[in-house]
Image (spheres, rainbow, N blue to C red):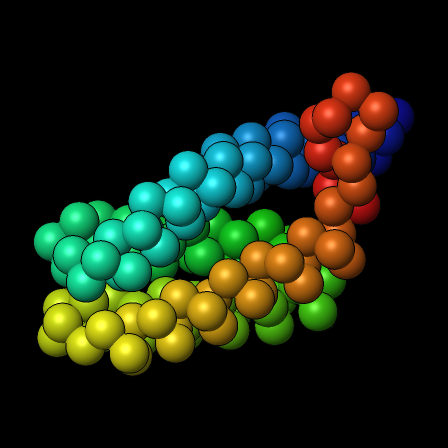
Length: 133
């Protein structure tokens, strides 16, 4: 009986942890979606002051993303998150140095990681929302 109770409590705790983690992941994905458009616009205009907050935010977003996929042991998504995180760091450095070609290249690499992961791990529902596969 004790083992059953302990196992049940552990399962509930793990479920709650994954639920919180899932909410953080969804929030970070929504933030990424809102960040990418204005960031690209700022980069296209060589407006590094406006690009900086978006570039900085993406590094944190990829921290959440990497953690989320590591807990789910999705190797392809982990690799994508790590590649995106490195590209986000390169983007931050390029924006700080005001190197427009480097910033655009880093942004392109970063955006590519989004698309590949979305195609592999996201499913569009009938109501237009998405769920994680």
